[in-house]
Length: 69
Image (cartoon, rainbow, N blue to C red; front, side, top):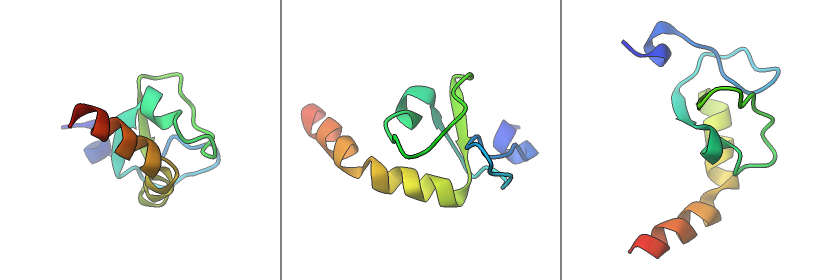
């Protein structure tokens, strides 16, 4: 049973929603507009902040995938 299933809260400062996804701290820092507590290796994001992170890092993630393909 993982932390998300146990009901961990979102790691974004000021957010008290339940986390839906977890990503690595280095990937979370790619989005400069999200103020995240990166003291841990994993960062937990609620549905709303995960959507914001995806929009903010879309171009970077596409470029990284193109390097491998």
